[in-house]
Image (cartoon, rainbow, N blue to C red; front, side, top):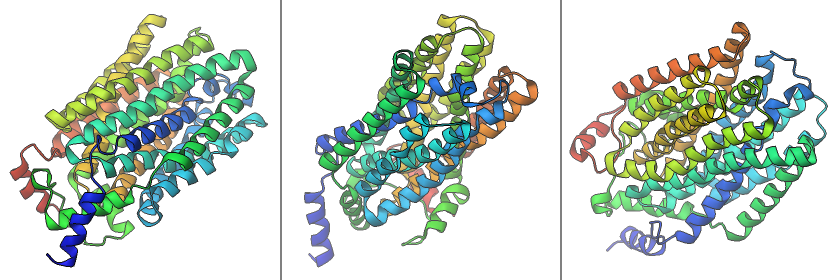
Length: 447
């Protein structure tokens, strides 16, 4: 046995992958993404409804959406930066940088003189989300086995998006008691402090697991769990090579990025214009908090099932169905009336998101080599979260041009249907157990 073989064996013994073998770290990463979800959840109810108090004129939908645009542009770029940076300095340091970047957010909201301060706060929120949420996903991919990725991403996104719903609901109640600014200030300050402290004390660096897996793939010691990775990528790809390959050159990865953009256009609608729609139809801030919390809670909880489901039946079918179910939920909003009916629409939208969201991430991870998986995930997440910015601009223009938010719901529903059709025609199944021989020939012939 040569030195390299000895290193492979030693690494496999020291850095065993699997949820059970790394349960403590798996749970700690889920707690971290819960905190990250609370940070974005605190904006999902209070700010859109009370935007006029920050100087946004009624009907200025493009101006209103500007705070989502700033968030999307920054988070999109930082997702890619975080992926690449974590391959150099490690996952834990990037996670801590994310919490450091969050510190100005509560102060900018508390002392905001106008909506521009909220836009600035969301720049820092984008940095926080781009660094911190990215690392929870990447770290879980590092320490879990290939056949567990659907479940692992399901747990990760369950924890994050359940927190989004809880954050919106809690800040709704707190704003009634403390006032909007004070509620958001106190809430975010506590979340940041707890998350940073727990990250420093309990999170382990997971980059060694990725390196050990990479060595094992070189030696092909993973047996039936050996994944097929796309050809057409150099041994040590540059950041630009990975970005262009994932974004444009590989058809399945390109289709995954497209679906990611589309689902965030939908989420931008539900982040800002859904609360505005409900407020215009007479709902109070706590009622709006409950309806939006149902969306986040169903999305979050369902991912425990949909992620595991994709480990059994593959990623492609749940993603396509998810895009179309999400479209159905969105188009129903302007067609129904009442808290119960809108709550059902929110639940349908949550199910649609749950079917597609964790499985897009798992599909990218399936066919990304561990040596550049973090960069590939960062590229996908760049496009996905840039969808917030794209959605903010387009939906703001649509709503303002039509003088109504209803048109934005119809527009997004059509886009989702077309996105599902595009994905169905262009993407290949990525699950390593399904059609493994055909996949091997397919991936190796892609350039």
